[in-house]
Length: 451
Image (spheres, rainbow, N blue to C red):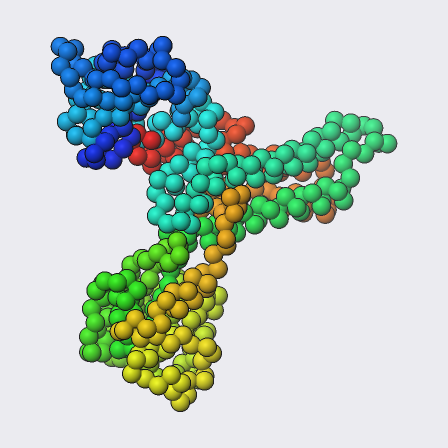
């Protein structure tokens, strides 16, 4: 694959400017044949003004070409980036001319795949490129940047080094097992080291749930009786008429979802059917979906405009086990601040979804309930399902090691489980393993062309 010179548009089509990326062994010859600049003799990391010409000498566009010499480029190869006007005709014409000069069009993610194969990025950093492109808020951007800068890779390297230490001690003990007077591996020390490694792997794996929530949007269910103002609240939070609002009871019969950004974090709000006793079959299905939404939510906004009974409090509390329940007293523009019976719920947030009163305080409460950690530059949160699965398998391997150390299992069996743990961690970064081509193609096929 690396014997080809590839090209592709690296920016969104139709913009004011387009950047065409070209990389490979014949890149300088191919680009130089289209303009008056001899790229091979240009200093690395310099930009030159020139014109792209057809074989007959017709000017296609005035462009800037930036020259990168291997290995100091994104792909690790000789590379050129052509900055031209964003006209679809111009971009396609330049690409056609490059293909005529022996280049071929790049596949999705092929530039980043070459960067990985040439040692510019490990596999987890390469995947972070796609996450960075797809980031929609500050939290997902910060996580992707942390991973791209190698903080996750550094964490895994430390764990692998510790596992290698364990493996080496056990292997050494096996090699000199005939010397009964020599002891290279103190089982108490090995047990403590294995526990520390497993504890860190477990912490990383457990961050996946929060990472997925940040990546996909933290689910927030808005629940309550009919006509309590759930749809009005959703519209107020979204600043859009997303849900139908009516005085007729039971208007919302299905869940309605949309997302908003609160302090750099995406929240996925779910407006639900009002909870009440009904004989209407369709409305009953909607209420069942309300309970399903509660089960899937991390945060539940319980909207009220009349004091709940103790039975209603017990029911909603029971359904929200493991979730953060936020009581919200709506219609504060027309209702008294502390109605009789309101004391059965603790510290409700008072709002008026109709006027917007109290919405800022509600958004702050929602953000706090999400319990989003303040991400330092070196913090690691796992967001990739492939990484999570590898960490989970490594945890299972270490559990067998810990059980074996407790039961005084032989060193050869312990070493085999340690090697499995090392292999599972290696799958995350691609370090020290032979990755099947199918795995690579699957990972990089999710990239956009030109990246």
